[in-house]
Amino acid sequence: MADRRPVETLVERDDGVVFTMRGAGGGPDLPHDLVHAVVEQQLGVDDGIWGCVADGVVWRSMTHRSGRQPPHAADRSGRLKRERSAPIQRAEALADLVTRLASGGAVLPGEIPATGMPPQALVAAAAELRNLRRHWAGLAAGDVWVVEWKSSTRRAGTRTSRR
Image (tube, rainbow, N blue to C red; front, side):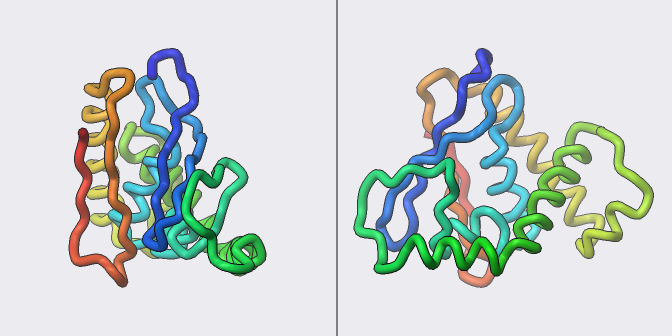
């Protein structure tokens, strides 16, 4: 939290495999992984960081905790990382842009049209980030925040809640 210690995210995939993911964050800023979850969900980005995790990518920051991984899981993870290199970079750029929009940071001329996203969708995602920053600021050490990520092609709705 305020001391900027790393944030640990518990990731449970639909196949029952559970990982922990250690990430940057804490203090007044939303953890980077949470920013991705919000931005990707808000903008319907299914092939970004969290879509990759849902499809079997295991990032270096992830540690397997439980559940039987499918055969050849490491090979699949590596293949997906290579195949989705461009969409992953796009997801990083979108997360950066929406974070800057949410905080009133500088946005270069032409940067918003270059995303291919409707400007109103980017503005709405930025508003959601601002809202979640307030939520994050209200968490005490040890609080758990549950975020359910569903791809836009599979989701009926989105749910975020704090426990």
